[in-house]
Length: 108
Image (tube, rainbow, N blue to C red; front, top):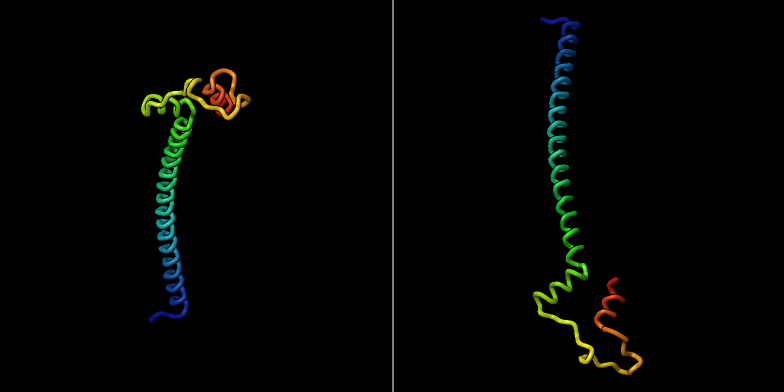
């Protein structure tokens, strides 16, 4: 039916066809992976933006001014008056307002 040259040619055509089909399938798989990678990159950018936003909120919430505002407005806290403070000795008593001294030493 077929001589040896025709068989070899037919086998080569089949082999080349299989290689071409493999290349097409691998290209499709690579494109699918690239789409998935792009989706993950976009999701990552969104999460990075949310993290940056939360960092700003945390920083602003931890500021002494914000803490002081919440303590005085929501919790009803007030600074102690000079006559409401008790000191171990007269040397420990600050000159001026204790609250302002604490605030200036610790937060500025």
